[in-house]
Amino acid sequence: MNLIKSIIQFFRSAYYELAKVTWLGRKEVVGATVVVVVFVVIMSIFVSIVDLFLGAIVGIIL
Image (cartoon, rainbow, N blue to C red; front, side, top):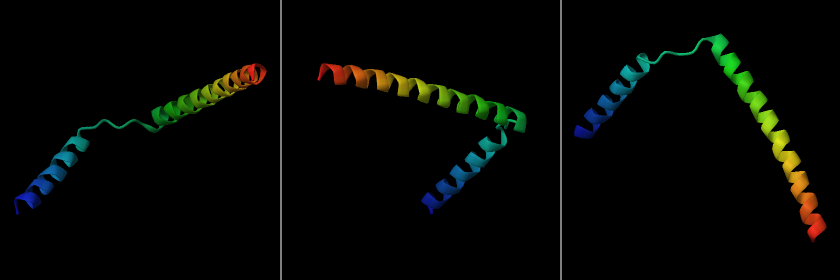
């Protein structure tokens, strides 16, 4: 019974904490998503260029 009470208390606490969260609006979520997608695209291009460059150097060396 003690385990069941502690599980119930955990979910009550989690619900209470989630009620205090200030959720972002649609505009902020879309803006943050766009920033993340642009950053991922830029970083993937950068990593691809570095990979091609280092691959060419290794190919020359070997």
